[in-house]
Image 1 (cartoon, rainbow, N blue to C red):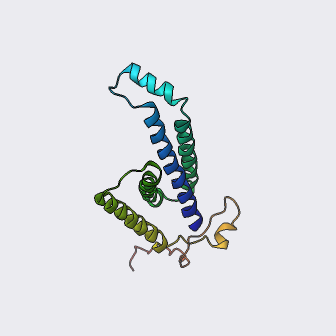
Image 2 (image 1 turned 135 degrees about the vertical axis):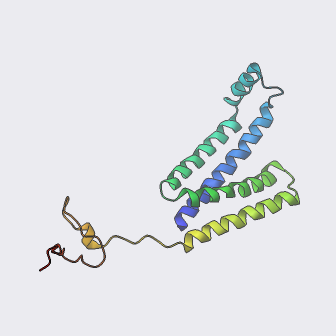
Length: 165
């Protein structure tokens, strides 16, 4: 599990880097004043040649690759809430690289996210692990019937006679 958490943290750094770069790129090209076809085309055209936006998309793709790797190896109910730590990483990145001011209420939200992620991580440690199959069950020939685990079944009884003397 430590390896999965490490990969998740690296992925979250990628994701936060991507968000910061996307924000910088959008600040350079300007946003939409009104949603019109011409405005959308202008933003897309400028975004396709903006180095910050292209790098932001690249880092978001790296995060997506990490996410796919992790989804193949862990449960969604464990992984997805932990990916919420991206809010923590993005908040710190916004302060350090964008000079944003974060209010006390937002910091309380960040603390709650960290607390929730800790609970999820603890729940993964505390849950019972599935039992490994016994060697006898895996060594049966293909197509052979395997007896279910537990006590051996009693032989069938003959039917009771219905005739009385």
